[in-house]
Image 1 (cartoon, rainbow, N blue to C red):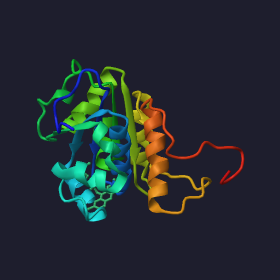
Image 2 (cartoon, rainbow, N blue to C red):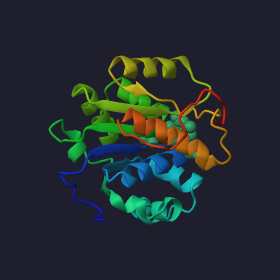
Image 3 (cartoon, rainbow, N blue to C red):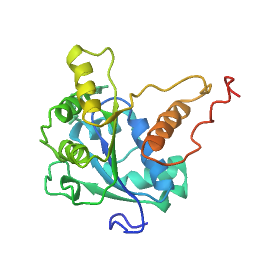
Image 4 (cartoon, rainbow, N blue to C red):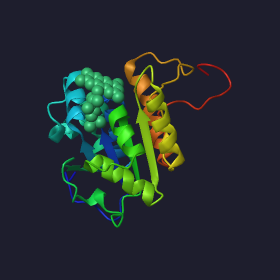
Amino acid sequence: MAPGSPDARRPSIALAITGASGALYATRTLAALLERGVHVELVVSDYGRRLLHDELSDVASVDRLIPFLAGKYGAGVEAGSITLLNNRDHGATLASGSHGCSAMAIVPCSMKTLAAIAHGLSRSLIERAADVMLKEQRRLVIVPRETPMSLPQLRNMVLCAEAGAMILPAMPAFYQQPKTLDDLADFMAGKILAALGFEHDLYPAWTGKAGG
Ligand SMILES: Cc1cc2nc3c(=O)[nH]c(=O)nc-3n(C[C@H](O)[C@H](O)[C@H](O)COP(=O)(O)O)c2cc1C
């Protein structure tokens, strides 16, 4: 798999990882997109890198995510490709509405980045790319993680939802009877994929009966 070079025949999705707890949700989402042959334009904030390292100590570095993902989720991830973008580069592809990235997910999304998106600050590539998604009326999936939440944080979620984003909190369900942390991550990644418009089998469809 080529580490860069977007392919016009492939869907292109922006994925941002910020410094909220839940790095496993990000890696599972990234792997699931790659397994579907997606070209992922990946941006990781400084604290996103720290959380990847702190929570998933076997991630050697963000530049070597594909070998990590292949080891954990299988060689199927090699169907897709990643372009890693610098969060300080406001001139990168995702900074422009003319770039053909159809959707973006921020997994997980810190309260800081949520606040910045709610107020259109565009101080980093992640914030600018989210702003671009909103102004172009494209799908923006925000996966916030914090508990409890303050009133400003709740209001920032409402502002983003009013602007057109989908707020998809990192709240895995238990009715599918998860046995492992990976089961919980599969559930969240499945929700995120569905929100981005992809079919998936990351968790069983509800049959009307728990575990059924
Ligand atoms: C170990 C650790 C866990 C954190 N967990 C969260 C969290 O769950 N939610 C959150 O909003 N911020 C959390 N933070 C704080 C953010 O990382 C911090 O506000 C950071 O400035 C966010 O920047 P970013 O959005 O550019 O990644 C955490 C920080 C650390 C070091």
